[in-house]
Length: 146
Image 1 (cartoon, one colour):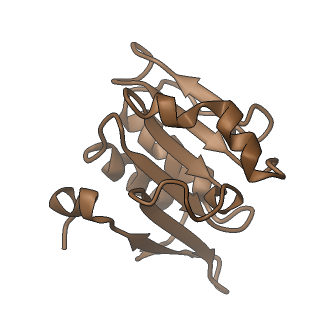
Image 2 (image 1 turned 90 degrees about the vertical axis):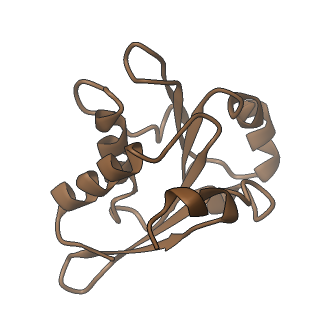
């Protein structure tokens, strides 16, 4: 899938909001500036967030709770995580019971984390557009168009 500009990237995030539910994990992979946070911003806006969602780069975990959004969401940025064992301290697995997890830089956690996640990979193309590759796990197949 090609995303022509930041507005298209946020619109894709808004589309995701129609399919997500508490307990889901969406991982966002891509280089700096590829559009990971834009996807998250579009999704959060469609879930009811007023204003722009900040990047969680320094906070690592940015929580959103009702009534700010329809259901709890944790926007996670693992860019500053150096050791996968640090992730256990974030208690993200506990949050999955009632929250949606949006995880940027999931590769820092290691391959064993979130095998059931919807995997989004963004690439910057030479013309400045974004290419989006989507990995749809079994848990998402009934909610994802073919």
